[in-house]
Amino acid sequence: MVGKEEPCVYQTPDAPVEARVQDLLSRMTLPEKIGQMTQIERTVASPAAFRDFFIGSVLNAGGSAPFEDAKSSDWADMIDGFQRSALASRLGIPIIYGTDAVHGNNNVYGATVFCHNIALGATRDADLVRRIGAATALEARASGVHWAFAPCVAVLGDPRWGRSYECYGEDPGLVSEMTSLVSGLQGEPPVEHPNGYPFVAGSNKVVACAKHFVGDGGTDKGVNEGNTIASYEDLEKIHIPPYLKCLAQGVSTVMASYSSWNGSNVHSNYFLLTEVLKEKLGFKGFIVSDWEGLDRLSDPWGSNYRNCVQTAVNAGIDMVMVPFKYEQFIQDMTDLVESGEIPMARVNDAVERILRVKFVAGLFEHPLSDRSLLGTVGCKEHRELGREAVRKSLVLLKNGKHADKPFLPLDRNAKRILVTGTHADDLGYQCGGWTKTWFGLSGRITIGTTLLDALKAAVGDNTEVVYEKTPSKETLALNEGFSYAIVAVGESPYAETKGDSSELIIPFNGSDIVTTVAERIPTLVMLISGRPVVLEPTVLEKTESLVAAWLPGTEGQGMADVIFGDYDFEGKLPVSWFKTVEHLPLNARTNSYDPLFPLGFGLSSKPV
Image (cartoon, rainbow, N blue to C red; front, side, top):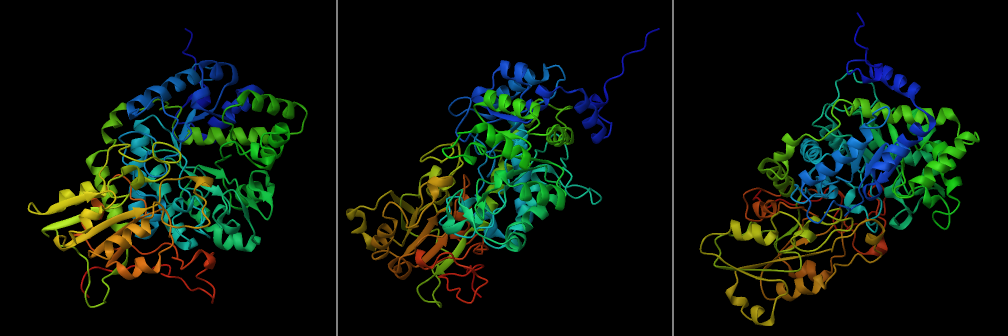
């Protein structure tokens, strides 16, 4: 009697991960190995790409969706389609699908959009951040996503940087504590789990990605993709500590930084990627490049691409976020390996690391989306969590023109209140960049609650709420009729280089709107921004109260909760608030430190 054929070791779920990795690696051809190192954008992910090139990973750019307002089930349909094509290949190696789920599964219509990292830094609540990670993992897995490009663990050196809001703060210790997002996304590893070895707790979790290694928050003058001028000792003291915390939690992937360190681009830096991260720190997951990160190694970008590939892969990049010209990347990789310019050992190391993460993440056992998770998307529990995060993140900078006469909390039963400003009723502005699109949008871009919505729901039955986006002369002439005004102003959405700013002024004449109202009506200002901005002396003098609300996301009720005193203000500044841009960068560790509001500042609205 002929016995049933035994499955291969790599197909055996209870076999040790390392045995599965080595067994599968031994069966792979060079094209299959290079395919695993290749990540492509979803718009070029055709069945032929998987059949002919054995593509190992797919991602979507910010704003790249199956179609407008595609829901989680639509995303799952698309990703499962890619997965089935990958599973049909000779060895049936699943893809790992990645997305920038950086404040919730923020690309997807109807998902819970949490406040951005700078707001979470203001909460000082590592457990809250962990719970947000767990909620994000559920909503991401519901859409078929396996891998979140989060957390950003940059230590912010200068608010002129366009990615300031992606940072938890300027203090390495604070940023390190907030890396609890990793345990939320991936699950918490057991005590005996080896440091630096990837960990994912199950099919309700996603692979996390610590980024951007290393020094991205410390560039000169806060220029995006700029140059971080620092000794290695400073890197170890300021920028590397959060990665140590991530590695201790079993973070599975690390993304290289576009930035340079003392003039050397990190994507080509063997010392940082291999000698420090992999060898000294013991990282056993894989390093992924940033979007077109290899193209940026030459000037003009994309020229002499073959040399870019050689330099980056030999430096330690394991998976390349190509994302479009994958045939050229694969051809150049093949030529470089066959010529010996990229050693076969380097390829095998990269593929081992990628396969290790795929096995640890359970993708061979659970490659397709779990439709039973669809009910978690934007669910009441997650929205309540978002609301909790908002109210804990709000920083009260001023409360009353006189210390003995606090202005907040406001009376929800006041007869008549004015709500005005560009940000009072704009969900897109409230969410900021990396929401539905890369740069973010204005308006009712998804399901959520604006500040105006929240205020209307929270006031008494007999309170009249008058809303004008821009206060009219006629309305302001009625100043005696208003008990108080709430003015919401701030930044319009942005991301990365488009967010770099040398001026940091409040756009849309925000300061003028504030002072115009505050001269006539007692005024609370809600400042919705991704970083500290210039606060004109007239704004500080004329307003009764000023709140840094950051970029709160879809759950605007959290603002009303605190404004009306249901909860006290708990937020503390995660970054120093400068007086003028000429004082930047500020450094709380120097004797010349002279901020408008220091790191850690935050008032209470409750009587002492």
